[in-house]
Length: 89
Image (cartoon, rainbow, N blue to C red):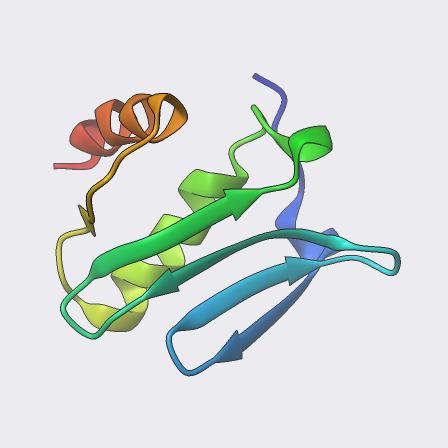
C-alpha cells in the first residue's frame, strides 16, 4: 500500500462530515455522528489503497473521542476496512 501525504489535500469539516479535496476533485469523505458511528465513507477509486479511509476514520475518532462503529450495511470493502479498524483497539 502506498501512502499519500494528507497535507497535500484540503481537509474540510462540516457538521458530521470530513472531506479530503484537491484542486480538481473530492478525494474522499466520511459522514459520522457524535456517537462515533460512521454512516458513510467513500474514497475516490483512483486514490484507494493509500490509507485515506484510515486517515478519515482517525479524524472521526479524534473529533468524537469514541471508538469507531461502522453502521450496517457493510460492503465487502467496508468489511476489509472493519478488519483494519480492529488493529487500532
